[in-house]
Image 1 (cartoon, rainbow, N blue to C red):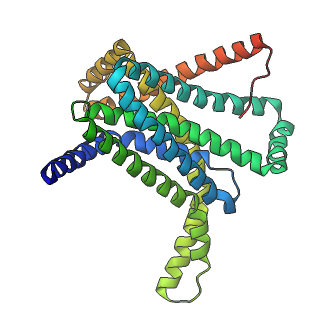
Image 2 (image 1 turned 90 degrees about the vertical axis):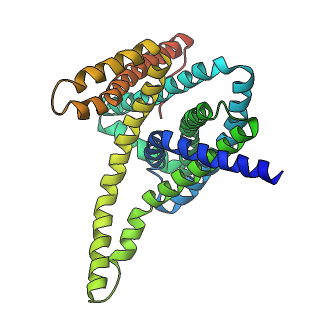
Image 3 (image 1 turned 30 degrees about the horizontal axis):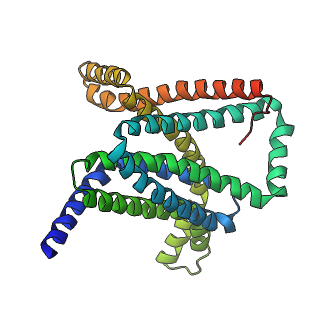
Length: 306
């Protein structure tokens, strides 16, 4: 029995390392998206919001891990369509944010100034919407991480599959939301360091570093907001193109052709799939938003704003 347990643990460790490498890109997108999702809440509520989203993420994975194993065992053909639906949803969310920002600008400064009053009027509702949106986005990205991991361990025993999926789910959740918590509290760390007293070299360095953090924090959050939106298109478009094999083949052919063009070909070839996946994601998101707007108009409902 001990030998069997040791063998299983070795397999789980080996498979977890491989899965962690394979899902590293998604992890980066997950980090950017979730850091961007919790922006806009008051400073004293940032960590509670991150904690609430992290708990929701754990619940997502408690659903996804058993569901992935059941789907793999009984209806493996459903994995790709479900992933593609999730990818389309990410593209829709990304384009809807851009579309909503454009609407606000078109409506003028009065509409732009009305939003903070609405938010201030019901902070709990605003936080609830933020948390709900972040958990919803996390569900799609978590599903992709679980699906990638499942593909790696598909030929292993049921026990190895379960423990590998569980390890990846726990490690990814702790890693992402630990980093998110650190990112959103950078400004507090900068304020603390900037108030250090003393004229020693160490004290002066701490104050200077603190001011640097304070000055960079707003730009970092704005950058994460932009990167988070781009990540939606990149991840969502990548899921869609991977499911549409003929599109994925054309992207691979384009990357291979670019690689042979010039000295910088290998570099351009490396980024080409991401760029083309993002473009595909923008187009898919735009079509999804148009279809949703038409559906709501036909139904007689007013399009919801985020």
